[in-house]
View 1 (cartoon, rainbow, N blue to C red):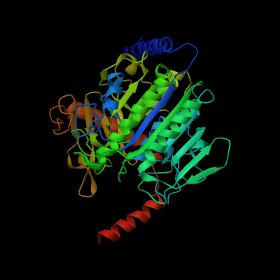
View 2 (tube, helix red, strand yellow):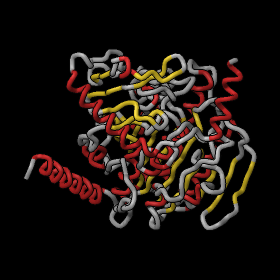
View 3 (tube, rainbow, N blue to C red):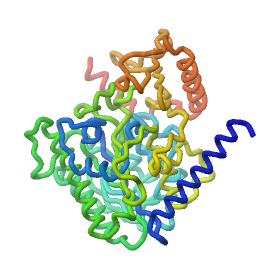
View 4 (cartoon, rainbow, N blue to C red):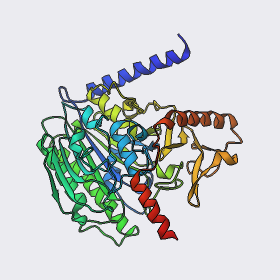
Length: 457
């Protein structure tokens, strides 16, 4: 048996062992519940996971003390639409046609019905609900989310800075979509309240909830009673409100006796935008290649199944959530689709190494960086309004993230063989995904580009 096959066989055996331990740890006869709290534009340094910053988040910190923090977890994209598409499908967003920018209010793009979401995959055993921001298509071919495996949807079609904006509610099996006006300061609380009612109604069966908060995306609309006069202003008030929602959720799960039955994941769709903290990481949302736009908070908690207070440096990405939840639920992955994500059950249960040899970071439809456990190769970054192709200038950037997590100094000259190896991985990804690119800019962005150029003149 060659070395590669031996490693694959050993890995499969360890995965089976981890799955067996997971099955033994959870209550007999019940599949685990899943709650994924997905924030919008929450930065790596905005919460109390990697040191205290300007904003105190005691409930999120408590979540980490009782669960597992992945220190090197990446959102699947540096913008929300592609990131959310990839998280729900386990596939890089370019495979579903949603890797280019974000869906605008006048846009007709959306998540194809041929894609299998987490909600689809967990059927028929699970009750499934999405509460909050969708942003994966709001025209009839892709809308509402109940066409994508969710039994219940209550939320908004896209970011809360877009217009026209309304609240919508729909239920599987009905063509009726209820519409109501938006009260911005109560929006996050409304999302949580509907999620809580759904959990209460489905306490006796397995459920999957995506609580897709539309905060702290600008503009900030903190709820009543959250202090806007602290050092982080209104942004800090909104993050404090998110923290309070986490606390309410955990208290509700305990009150319902579902605490040990429920895996709770807390994370963000990309790094911080105009405000917020990337926690010392380089760049921000929408910027190309560097970690500040992609690397975000991640905590997973399930008492009796996951260890408490564990920090794991294994690289992981939002594409891993679908295969991981499927593995924990004993559900097979879609056989007819390429799944880019990996089952990270062993990473969460026992702190095992990442199942990924490398993660690809996209900027729109272009692979621009590759991350391995130690190294990061960056080929493009934005400079004065355009994407600067480092490689054309002979500046391919290699960073040793063990010694330089802020990506300040390239060590490509000191490790040319590593740089060449990762460049080859990136080149291979470019070739693989090039045929999936749009042949033209989506019409909504042609209009937006023309408007922006006119404003700049």
